[in-house]
Length: 337
Ligand code: GDP
Ligand code: CA
Image 1 (cartoon, rainbow, N blue to C red):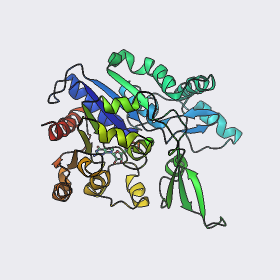
Image 2: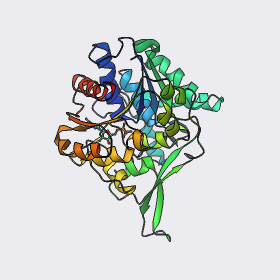
Image 3: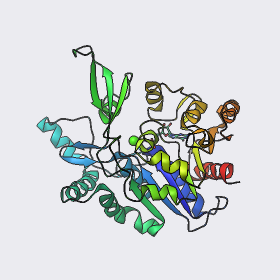
Image 4: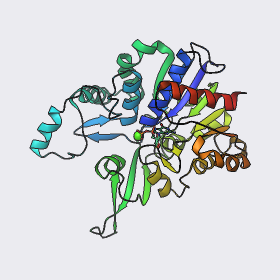
């Protein structure tokens, strides 16, 4: 196996990728070449413009995590970060005060915004940023591709008794960062998704892969939006590569984040089997050839298999790169036999 493609969100996807790359480097993945390439197709539907800067949270989380620049405690943003700009903006009373941009992180957004304004597409900007973060570590063995170069934004409708419609629509980041996903998401709107085109290399990365992985990323606002880019589902249906997924839901809720709220909002049962069945078996018009659930959800495997989707229960907690590499190995073992 030479080419592995991973459809990734931010934190969950980045952690999985770390373990996958660790597994490749230590020769622990069955049938995977030691010089295998990993192509990351990352969600960009969380992106936002803030203080005049284009911020791409999931691209940056993957880039900083794999490039060893991430703040591991927070799981996002730069290590050894300082917050002078944020403090100064707060004194000016400039909104939004709830979205924290660290000083080091701002440099990334300045480079990105300048390049975008000079006319470069996001994919080329991302390649340029990765020259600093990924190339020194992985050479050309890891590629980070935005799912699309087009603007796509996830918006969330929440109840608002003060509004005439009884509802208010906020950007996904406001729902998550300011409101901490503490109120029900009544509806999700993926602005621009239906009109988006896959970014350069994205469809080929699926068509030419030897393995496609849906990591334990958010099934709605990370993997769901990637799958929602036109032509993505067709590419997954057509690829000769096996497609395997790992559940982000363990014991009936997300491990961290807000997958529970997002699944509830689209009417999908919040369980490991519920998410597997939501993705569906490729043999039945879905996207997966195999689905891993955590050991605590072992009793749900039969239900998944009954729908024609091979399923196995293994430990799915990404506690460290060794444990995560073992998850990747189990995923490969499930579909590549
Ligand atoms: P985000 O964009 O930063 O929200 O990150 P992702 O969408 O890539 O991943 C978020 C998902 O990762 C959440 O739904 C979590 O449940 C899941 N997750 C985080 N840590 C773990 C873990 O250790 N094991 C599993 N199975 N899922 C995890
Ligand atoms: Ca995200």
